[in-house]
Amino acid sequence: MPVTLSDAVVVVTGGASGIGAALARRFAAEGARAVVVADLDAAGAAAVAQELECPVRLGVGLDVADEAQVAALAGRVAEEIGPIDVYCSNAGLIGSPGLGTDADWQRAWQVHVLAHLYAARHVVPAMVARGSGHLLVTASAAGLLAEADLAAYSVTKHGSVALAEWLAIQHGDQGVTVSCLCPQGVNTPMIAGATNVSTTLAAGAVIEPEQVCDAVVEALATDRFLILPHPEVQAYEQHRAADRDRWLSGMRRLRARARGASPASA
Image (cartoon, rainbow, N blue to C red):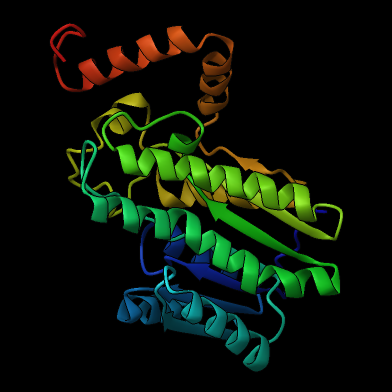
């Protein structure tokens, strides 16, 4: 079922900057009645909301890893604004390179998996009850392929994709649609100046958040689950499935090239 943004009530988490802020602006431009910008950075969320040209705009502080906060926001929006038509579970983080620490894994798990679970628990049931609504899960191309520098990021983004698929299977015949956004490099504060995402930056073009929004709006209008702002990711995923050993070898070469080393010395 295609998603209609005109007159919609939309919530965007991770909305203070990057892809989230761009999505909030785009949804307002597409005619949304209300856009709620939620972020751990409450001041940043409020600043983005203030820019929006829509009848209702709200910026709020939200830790997506806190289920009680997610539940409270869903209830507040439903009570004060109206039923949520589109919920963008978009917050994300990079974390430490390599295997990282237990704390890195815990926070990545909370933000990249549990945050989507909390949305499924506290936003989706109301959508099911009325037979309409859309959940957008921001994952990453790393969730379909791999991020060779960041273990916790790569693994938990796979979890994002898997949970989005599960939700699409569960609710696709109940009037509730689910999509999964999987970009590669995007010019956001998350990767600006980062040296620990070198393979992501070496894998292809770094695009602007507004280009991601173009892909999102097109996918919502055509009821497409997988949103690939970098179309080449589809071919990469097919190569991975067709010959996993060859794909792993190619990833090692990519990592070596990003680090300016030969595969043998990387």
